Structure formats: C-alpha cells, structure tokens
Amino acid sequence: MANPKEIWAVLHDYPTQYLLLALLTIVLSWFVDALRIKIAIAATGFAVPYTLLVVAMIATHFLSMITPFTATGVPFLIYILYRYRLSVGQAAGVSTSASLGAQLGLVALVSLILTLMPEIPEPFVPYFPYLELIVVLYGIGVAAAVCLFTHGHRFRSLFERFTKYPNISLWFNTFVTSFRQTFKKRGLYFLGVIICGFCHFALLYLAGCFLLTGIQAEPALSFENYSVAALLGLSPSLTPIPGGAGVSEIFSVYMLDDTFTDDRIGAFIILWRAVIFYFPAAAGGIAVAYLLLIWSKKQKPRALDKVAASENCQQS
Image 1 (tube, rainbow, N blue to C red):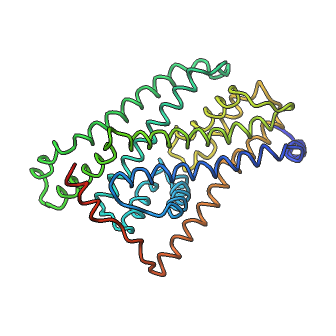
Image 2 (cartoon, helix red, strand yellow):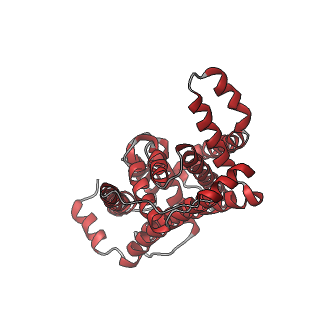
Image 3 (cartoon, rainbow, N blue to C red):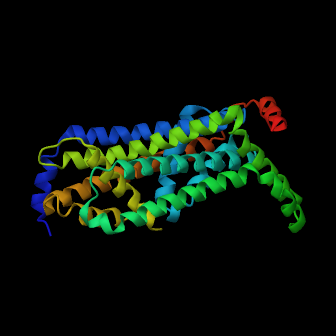
C-alpha cells in the first residue's frame, strides 16, 4: 500500500498538459459521437440541431455510466429523437443502427490494437487468447444483428401471427424501414456511423493514454501506452457494475504493478477515475438537468422535413 502523502506528491508534480489533453480528448469524443447520430438521422431525411445532439450524447453517456450494462443510454436517446417528431419506431431504428455501427467501429479498433500491440503485458499473457476470442465472437454477434435487422421485413409475419396488437407489427415495420435507410447510397451513411464510432472510442482510449503517459517518470507517448490504456478502458465492460467501479482500478494494479511504484499506480488510479468517470458524470448530470429544464418550458422542437422522410420510407 502506498502512503497517501507519496501519492499526493506524485499528483502535485503531475504534468498539467497531459491532464488537459486527456480532458480535451474526452470532450472531442462527445462531438464525434454526436456526429455519429447526426449522420444516422440524416439518412432518414430528418434534422435535429447538432448542438442539441452534443448535449444529448453527453447526457446519454452519463446515464449509461450509472446504470448496469449501460441500460438507459439508448432508450434516453430514443426519447430525445421522439421529442423531435420522429416516431418511436423511427427513433428506435436510427438509435439501433447508430449503436450497432459504433460497436462495429469498436470491434475494428480493438482488433487493430490487439494486432499491433508491441508487447503484451506479462500478467495479461495467459488471458490474451481469450480476449481475442471474445472480440471475434462479439464482432460476429454485432454483424449478425445488423444483418437480422436489415432483413427484418421477412419477420413481420411472425409479429402479425403471434401478437394481438397490430400496432406492434406496425412499429416493427417502421423500425426496420428506418434502420435500412442508413444503408442508402451504397451504405455510405452506415460507413460514416462506423467511422465515427471508431474515432469516438479511439479518443476515449487516447485520454487514458495521456493519463498513463503523464504518470511516467520520463513521459513519452507510445503505442504501448495507448494499447494498455485501451485494455484498461475495455475492462469496465466486463462487469454490470455501473461505471465499472473498481474494475479498472483492479486491472490497473494487476497490469502496472511491474512497471510503476505503488505511489504512481495510486496516483494514476485517482486521475483515471476522476477524468474518465467523474468528469463525464458531472458534465452528463448538467446536460440532463439542462434538457429537463428546456423540456419543462415546453420548448417546441425544430420543424422537421416530414415530406423527405416519408419519401425515403416509400423508397425503402
């Protein structure tokens, strides 16, 4: 166990520029993630203000962090799009397409990192093949979900046969139609969603890389630092605990114990939790409060291009 005074001494001498760079990359990741949703919405012919989407994604990340398995993030986004005159089916289709595209981007990023890792951390070597297998299986699962929803019209008869409520069948048809619209123009919209998802997660892991680099006695950016930060960033997804509380810290001690002294590991854990979790949580709480405030005033949503949207639905 490290002495708190020693940890504080490390924090006191921590290079400010790396802390600021970490915060900046997190903010940039929010803007990129909002662009991901913007592209998915544009495929349906609707328009939602980009600034609102930025605030909405900050709030969505906050809700994802405080609930098990990020359970409230996508439903909250669906509700936001619903308030901007997309139907529930359309909002669900757009959100699902954007989410699956982001997950494909994540799989591509993690696969690239695992392939290019210059050196596997020694404590992690026995488990590395299992991680590769998990990434492959997860990628196959996401790709299968994309294919399933793309051809979802073939399953509409099942809803009509087994449900007493025709609205469910209608909702599913709208959902699939909106999902498929992101594949217009030879899939360029969906490709844009994947690229934005890739860049979003790359920026998040870059924030961890900056924090890890700053804790070194002689800071030097390297892909090795980035790959370790990416593994630490992935670790919370292995648990249903909101925000992965405790998991990243355990992984930090496990993976960095042979590299850093206890006081530096303790300082890194504090910085990691503060920047990667508490900063987005504070910003997200403010974003949620702001959205509730403007909704309480019954602000009218921006008029949307319903004609274009209906034409796109007919073409699909």
